[in-house]
Length: 149
Image (cartoon, rainbow, N blue to C red; front, side, top):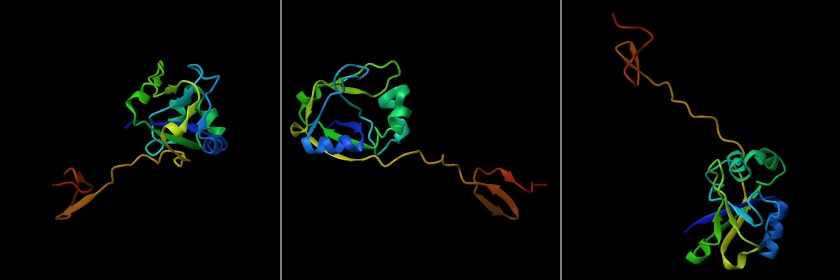
């Protein structure tokens, strides 16, 4: 079942939860509609989500809190999938638009906070060494330190 994510501010998330509707953006790059992505906040960092959802304006939106929360919508009905139109971007971003106001009573959905802010530092390969008869060798078998005579 496809899952779509609408990223928003905490204030908007509260309003969406209360009224169970998402109002369309009127000034969106691809027209009037509710914007979504299939990129999950569980597997992506806010910086990547901002770049995907807002393109060049992602950093400013991130600072303004537009990626603090998300609405996850599960689409069970195959006919409902057709109302999510893929937006054609020059840089192959994962952006979809739902035309008009979205009544969440017609979908399975949940709201939560985005917790991942920045990616962790890159993992490095540990320098493991094994001692064979006072000759140190790393895991690849190359001599380290004292060489053979």
